Image (cartoon, rainbow, N blue to C red; front, side):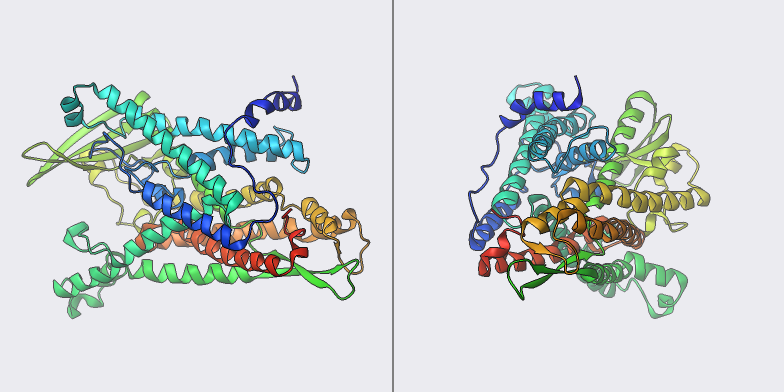
Length: 534
């Protein structure tokens, strides 16, 4: 059975999957905006619905990726857009590498591709939820199980069902926004999640490390009030490091610079002149942006890293050697656990009340050496500046500290993954989303537009587009990979990460452009044909 026969064979199955009905004809902008706001409100509501039966000792495995996964730990939306992104990664890699040969310009093949991707999302919901429940990250509440007279396994099963249900909610909320709203649900949820973390990083008065507020503004009030920095230590190396890192000034500066740089690269473009073949004097321009594929391919790069880390930690905890060490200091007991696997070592920390044994919190497994360490993303200055790595777990376990050459190698590999991965996924992205030279030339031809000085046929337009689109896509992938690396090295407000910050700024900028495009279509209905509306 060849590939086309297989995919056409499963076509009736994927067509039977529940789907949001596509609107017939043009949807008015006000109605699109209403649907978008309604889904955004529902997203925030579901993000505050706690998982029934979840223990407070549970571990957020994807805490480092939470910003751009648009999920909320401990709630129905725990998985966020993770399953959607992972399914997209798998199919884009298979189609882009010509392992799966589908002609995405053919309506039937495109429908099969989209249906297969939805079916794969359902599978990935289970694949991402099950290891977290069975791997000991999402723990059942023992007290609740005892009070209800049921087993812990039953509570774990209920948690698994809730996480899967939340994943399905996200899938169909994304579909509603994509068909009835403005932009896409994935983009909307990323902006909502990252914006919430940015605000939290600026004004949150809750106490964090050393009893100082989490938000930068109340943190500096605490620093001044408690006299944590004095004039005598202000200009010393330790004082400057404290102000820049602990005080959050470096993260604030980095955030502002990255926002300005993203706006600059988003506004940089090559404009190809267009003229209407039947309407004399009707002219326009087709913009080929420097970031032509947007920054969404960066999600795919980071999501790929996240899945590699999850797989590695699960394999190390199940097949590797487990070492534990307990250290009690005052009323707090820290239990450090090390997992020694074939391709890398991981550590995690669980904190308990030394008097009652009540769990106070736990950290997700972190790669500290080996291949998985080199493939892990950098999330701030403490991951690469010498002397700033957290070594308490490794010291307690008797493991050697990370050498400077290992830190340098980590930075080099993460930079390579971001830049090379950004280029590869950008090229795959434009082909699978109809942004390639061939798809764009056909769209321009169907709209009745042509490029002055060229014959009015798709082949002539495609040859011109081939001069710009692939080259700009590669350059844009390198630029976005570089910006993500800079933001990841310097840190960001609220710990949203370089990828999350770039995504949010770029999505908001493009959302503004899309809103302007929608308004143009309302004013000039003829333009709906060019923008793809029916």
